[in-house]
Image 1 (cartoon, rainbow, N blue to C red):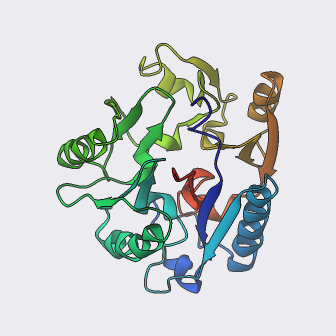
Image 2: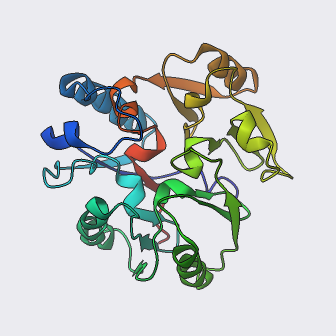
Length: 263
């Protein structure tokens, strides 16, 4: 079914916790402003809902400062969901908290029990699942995921995340069946051979983490050249503020789990 990798009936988000100011970050450029973070998050949820999707917003997890970034806790496919095993020790409990939520949508929920893998390193396209190695996703975790998704007929391909980049999807996003948005540094690796690639604008690497959600491309605001490139390719763009999530290495994909459960 064309579009299954970007046309969704459901999304799951989680409210921003007060503890988010203590979230993980590769470079400390200051704690996020909670009021702005929550306002941006509300805008994000509203954009997803504007497409007609059912968006479940879970209560904040104060024990987990990074809990708003729900994408790392699971991989949602049409046939079933995979509860991940985050590579940051402080985040392991987030996946366990997400499992019962997923069981409310899926009959088939499986767990990664060996190695480490985070959803931010997993890009699902129409033809394959790309998984980037990173500091949070290791070879054992990838092997475990490969075995788990084989039951649903998915092929998995391992790619290299550029040095110094937190997650594979920090530098790329799926726009449609044949098209990805990517930073020049990631595209240069050749990992998207066979796809049409739209590059982020010069100096706008932080704009690479967008999501195609039904008829919209949801992207962080403030990246004019990248927005122009996406719109020139025929997509409808909805910018959303991301200044505070970015202080915690978060982007558009990190803030939701997006899926259409079969049946």
